[in-house]
Image 1 (tube, rainbow, N blue to C red):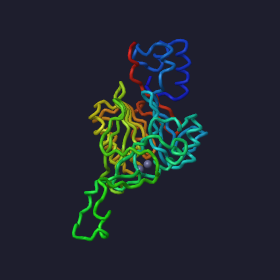
Image 2: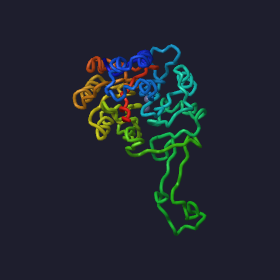
Image 3: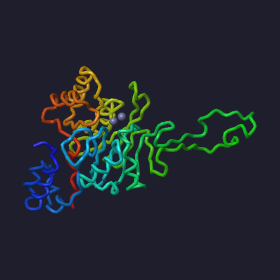
Image 4: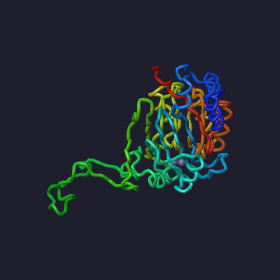
Length: 323
Ligand SMILES: [Zn+2]
Ligand SMILES: [Zn+2]
């Protein structure tokens, strides 16, 4: 049985665990007898991805809309990856899944497009001080800073004609669209915990030239789980960068940005993911595109994981440390 099951299957698993731990672990493909203390199997932190925002899905209580957001629970951390297109719809969708966005360890904003940051206002209304990892860009929407040496000086000018009367602060800080938000700006690959990483790349594609994008990479016992927002720098380049952490790619979830790509480009990317990087599972959503859904389905077969709005994907956790 595959590693990814829907919520219902998980609930069943938890129920079985209370009575028959070994059987339950067989059902979910649990890989470590260390995790087989019944109480720990039930109480251990969740290890899953829940899609909170997308334009397709089969959960009636949630509203479909263009954009992406997902709650990632791993290693005891609750991470909101992107915030969708609209604050009210994000609020509705989170409520429908019983997810409290006032309880988060941190947020990751993948990039500065409105269909990923439009719901941030709602998150801040319930969680104003949550740390938010966001791409650092020159004069970017999430704020920025530069050393005051960035501009050329002319000491022959009178002080009143000079910036800051000729004595600027060492660092100039530039505002964000959300004053008071707790942004942590990222411009290089960053380890948040030993297992949770951010990979950052800059797009060189027409239309998104110079756009910086963050992807979330979790190093699980089965390889990397890579969560992508829009993959503007190229899903192949994001995967290549992630392989520096671990060459084994277990799952890619999120937007692959092939929504307007011609079939020849789609086939090229699918081949690179499947044959070159030997990606084990894909759970495409958002801007992957309908023809790319089909192409990925053909290539990955039963390793193509449906991940519409409301879907919960399980991730294999690190085994608990033995007593
Ligand atoms: Zn985008
Ligand atoms: Zn997008």
